[in-house]
Length: 297
Image 1: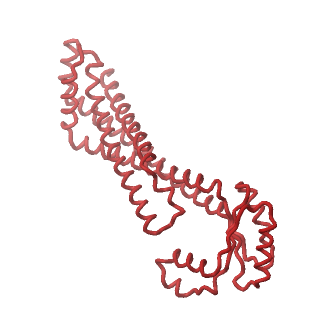
Image 2: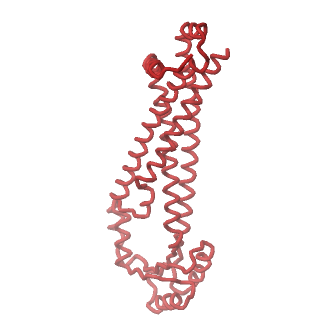
Image 3: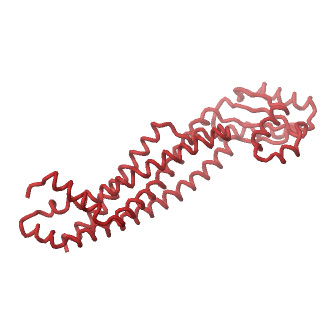
């Protein structure tokens, strides 16, 4: 029996509106699973961008005791000048440190009121010649025992902590997305089986007049595919909304370290394509299994 586009389109549309509650539930479940997947991809792209940003600019901070003598500060500066492993450095005085302190605790005025500029340490922000984590830590350790040095902080440690946190969060969201995707497939499976059962007499008549299994299968598989695409479209909207919210939060707090988590439109569209492909596969596979099991029964 020849395939007719108008027949397939009509039957697919009828199938979608025949069981509206099941269709809506399936679309929403697909949207939830793919939104979690999209959030995980968004987070992972942000981590990759953060790593790329700091790959060639790994620095460490030499904190100087608040009561350090000027001779001790000069000794640290001479050591930096004489080190062949130091590419550049910048001295941050108490006023600059206090400005950073106020920006960081902007939402806690009671903390700002409790600390004065004279109580904060000065520091040297150091950029090494070779941006290798192990070499940077070895270089920074050379300054820890100098007189007047409070401690040495490595930017790599904070990046590693942030990476660890985001990787765990990403894995949790991907796990939840997989579980939701399985639930979506099962719900889609039951939706298609219900539609087939409701039209079982029509399907039997089609078989009697010579309709092939492919002819019978296509409208139902397109129904599942459309449900997956609708769910994927909602997930794409949620990813764009999440990215916009992140961008607004970063701009509001002026926390430039997290700039890479607000993705440009090119990266968002790449993620969107993956979500649409995933939604198509969920719908196609779930409905295909349901139709095949019914027709083979």
